[in-house]
Amino acid sequence: MAFISIRGIEKTFALGKTEVRALKGIDLEVHRGEYLSIMGPSGSGKSTLFNMIGALDAPSAGDIEVAGHRLNALSRRQLAYFRCKHIGYVFQSFNLIAAYDTTDNVAMPLVFSGQTYQDACDRARTVLSRVGLEHRLTHLPDELSGGQQQRVAIARALANQPAIILADEPTANLDLQTGGEIIALLKELSGETGTTVITTTHDHEMLAVSDRIVWIKDGQVDRVEKREDIAIKVGTVG
Image (cartoon, rainbow, N blue to C red):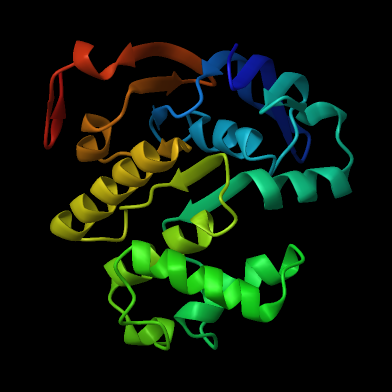
């Protein structure tokens, strides 16, 4: 049974008097523990699909079932709880709170989910140590490098032990070496915890560690390929 099941998903946006069909009937299944990359040009619908999987937006038609939860049937409050408990988000812009140190940036989502501040900080320090930042627990975001900030963002995503990590272009703002380190970290964490990782990316190095790649074109799935079936070099895909 698929861990994530997407059936006939459509999404239409109204821009004034014009309707834009961002998704035109997406069918896709994702397995537990899989590392999946979503590829496609700007405007292809990949970010819209990403937001649907993450319960950040609702489809105009079709069904999405994630970890046994039919997202279409959940109320806004239930969706908020679902996102908090089951999904960790990693964004290309890091989205750290500038006034909070590293520990508090990771701890705050845990506090919002009901943990005491002390328990949340203990968990934050554990996860930060796992991503190699045990020596940066009291640093503010502007005292960290881009790669370190992304590691904080990954620690924050992992803090609630989510079933799914959604990473939106997680290496876009990083140099090649640092981006490679982040990719390796996500892959390693996925293997250790069995967490399902779904990324949107243009980084071919990230494709190289994926189990499957989903190619989105004009709001539809163009093709789905296993990693071993494609040849990848930095700068090219063949």
